[in-house]
Length: 377
Image (cartoon, rainbow, N blue to C red; front, side, top):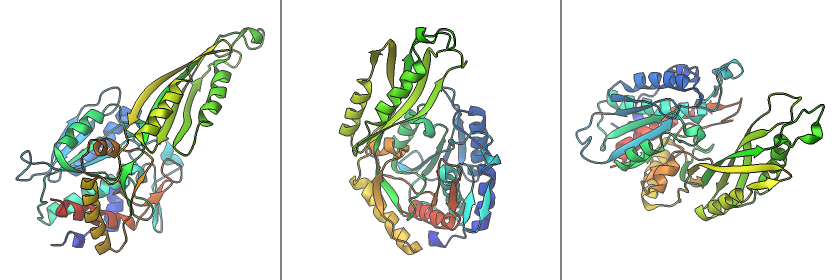
């Protein structure tokens, strides 16, 4: 049976996806992420041996599912890896409810990346129901912390990937349905300014404001952005009382580069900003890093060729590109394991209050995933 002829049903997939979207799972709420993992584990239980892996470092746990196969544990197979955490805090459903309007369906995390995860599970379930055996063993791994750089599960992903021949990542597709065959490098930094407190009303001149110093540093940091390396600050925490000159201010910064050499230079520039000026100390601590996944690796291009031929049968021309916006594919691609990313649903507005998918892409992407699982060997 041609896997592209499997009876994927748009309305049934939307109905199954809805409770996933309505189970809000922001990264820093471990209990919420675990509730989402429970739902994923239940869906995967149709035909798979499901394992719950406890979380660490304050994050939720992971789910690993292995599907029955005569070669499971004997030969490398296919790993599907996705994350169940989102950037949207609890309560986002109040302003971004699950809602369909024609070919558009809205909801927090529906594009990044619960839609792609659900489609992947549905593809496997339809293969099982049809009695089809994939040439290679299939493992699914869902993790809880990708949106903050995968600090607690990178080693788990890398260990699982090392046991497999191919890695498929159902992150959001490009709007033209294209796939990602390489990703830029990303480094995160924790920033802190340490000033001198004083009473802001009575003795303002005695203080050294950590907030004011951080504001100046943010402008300096973002002004370092160029064509080869970008710099941005996205998180700031400081102050408790408006009548106190702030003694500390904390922030988080991110830099992205197309090559490892550019990233290394960017990291060096960030670290060189440390020091004391006008009585305020500026501290920079390097955080998690996503390495460059170089495009055009032969193994990855071989998977892409298979995907492109499947896409042609479905009815669209698949393009492959290297791009920014890190994913866990950075790690597996960097390891040299053939990896194909952005196999998830089409849509727009990820990480915003307009996040949505194109409903018509659900069947398309399910067919693509089922085809890859049946044709990769």
